[in-house]
Image 1 (cartoon, rainbow, N blue to C red):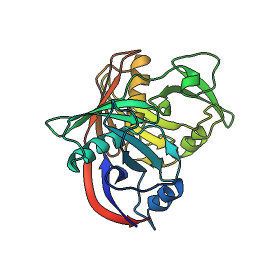
Image 2: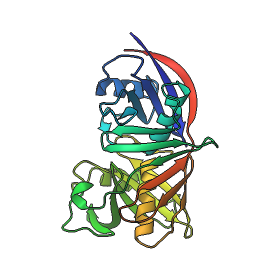
Image 3: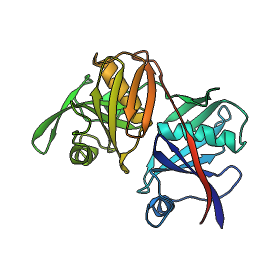
Image 4: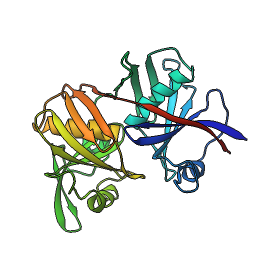
Length: 276
C-alpha cells in the first residue's frame, strides 16, 4: 500500500509526517529506520505520526520515532510542525490544539504571525523523573566521562537532557562528548546533550547531540532544557533567545512549577508517497 507523507522542518530539524487519522497503517520501528536513511529512504531526524486521540479531552495523539527506529517521548520542533501539519491538512480548524504524547499532554498555539508557540509543561528536575542517577537533586552534577570530570545540568522536558556550558560554540566537543554522555550509565534511558554558550543575560547559542539521531540543526526540547538550566543557575533571564545552527527559538520560563513556552517557525518542504 502507498502512504501519503509530508516532509517538514523546524529550523532545519527535519521530519517525515504521517497522517494516520485519514489513512490507516501499522507503523513499526523498522519502517522508521528504513525511511529515515538519508541515502536510501526519505531521510529525516524524526518520523512524526498523527493519530486520533485515546483521550476525549485532547485533539490528537502524537508519536515520534528517531531515524534509528527508537520511539521517543517528546520533540519540540516536531510539535510545531505537527501543529502546522494538522491545520494545513484540515484535520482541525483550531489554532489552539491539545495533543497527547508519550510523556503527557502539550498545548500548541498557531499565532497570527505564523510562528507557533508550544506549552511544553513544567520541566522535571528530580533525578529519578529525568531519569538520572544521583543521590539528591542539584542545579548541576559532576559526571565522570572516561576519567574526566564533566559538569552538567540534568533536565527532563518529557525526554531527558544534559546541558553543558561552553565558552566557544564552534569549538564545543559535540561529537566527542555527545555520544559518550548519551550512553553514560547515569542516564539509564540515554540522554540528549546540549552545549550552551551564554552571550548575555538573554541571548545564547546552542548545539545539541540528539539521542538516536546525532547532532541536529535544532532541538526544541533541547532549547527548553538549556533555558531552564541557564535560568536556574542564574546565567540568563527569561525570555531567552537561543540561536541554533538551523535558526532561532524564543523560550520563556517563570521558574519551578511553571510551564516552559517555546516559540518558533515550522515549514513544509514537499509532499510524497512511500510504499508500506
